[in-house]
Image 1 (cartoon, rainbow, N blue to C red):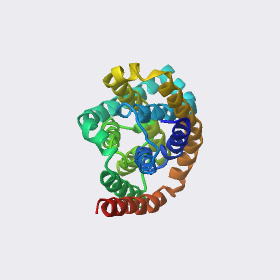
Image 2 (image 1 turned 90 degrees about the vertical axis):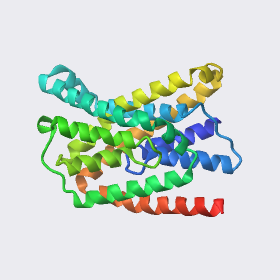
Image 3 (image 1 turned 90 degrees about the horizontal axis):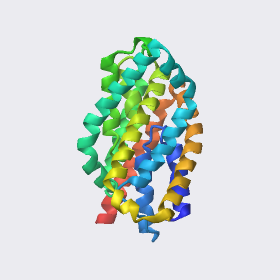
Image 4 (image 1 turned 120 degrees about the vertical axis):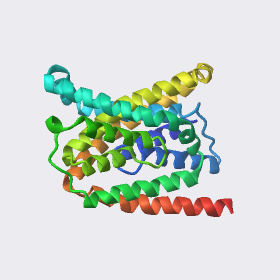
Length: 267
């Protein structure tokens, strides 16, 4: 892995993480393209991808630092933190059993294409989901748990975490702006947990990888954090403006193109 691959993937991660287009799907397609173009890309498991997600999670924490500070210092805020924990627990229940096939899917363009089509259909459905009036104080434990299941599915490259969670939140009657913020905050503990699992699982390979791997990895993570911060502000505005569903017209054609090319190349 070279510095320009890391920088490219970091910027790509930052742009696509919060948009409902699946950052992991785009990263998997980019990495497979590197291989076909004669630029080998190697990493232990999906450690590099996990660290890019840490970069965008950092952007969430920085953007929502005032919200998090209030949650830690008020009684109502602690209840919301508990709802976040509930959602995170639901994510873990679904994500851990799917970790093996999801990692393998990073090398399977057919799976990525199918997942992108699924994301497109989910995002398109938000055109017909007006949302509701449930905000911070009225959010229920059931709503937090159901929304928490969605990032568990998003371990597959091509399924957008933000697209799946925002769609679920709108279907459950949550306010558009609030479900977007809760979705992004929910991604932070999920990303931290998944990254720790990857680091522990591949600790021996990482110990022999040397400083060069970590140097290019941190470059990519920093690029993801900076670009992700600006993408986050854009998505929060788009969800409230009801233009969110239009990203389906990007995901659906892209997924179909990937499926078609994977079939043609195999033939």
